[in-house]
Amino acid sequence: MFGVPISHVLIVSTALFFIGAYGFLTRTHLIMVLMSMELMLNSTCLNFIIFNKYLFPGTQDGLLFTLFIITIAAAEAAIAIAIILNLYRNFQSVSPEETTTLKY
Image 1 (cartoon, rainbow, N blue to C red):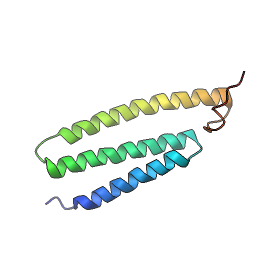
Image 2 (cartoon, rainbow, N blue to C red):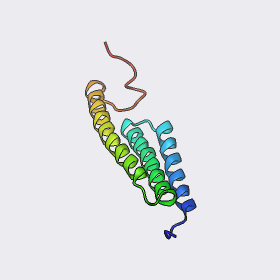
Image 3 (cartoon, rainbow, N blue to C red):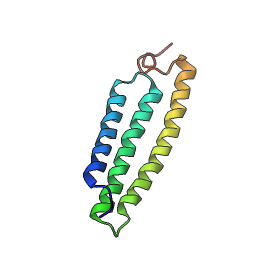
């Protein structure tokens, strides 16, 4: 009906989510952790769009949720980068292991 089967898009979305989850759990650099989190959010957006297109083709609900997720992700990225820059200024590192100890 639309050209690409829903199963193919869901496989790609699942792979993106698990790549993001693996990166979030294993990376030691805060910027890479942030990028992995963004990858998981984009996978969720892809799911909203594909389910809206295949299950409810006449509505725009999935696209509306996707716009909210993109807006929240942009705000989250801006705040996270500000926090990371502040951590780098205080600790001269952006590694999560090194930034958990407080210097007095």
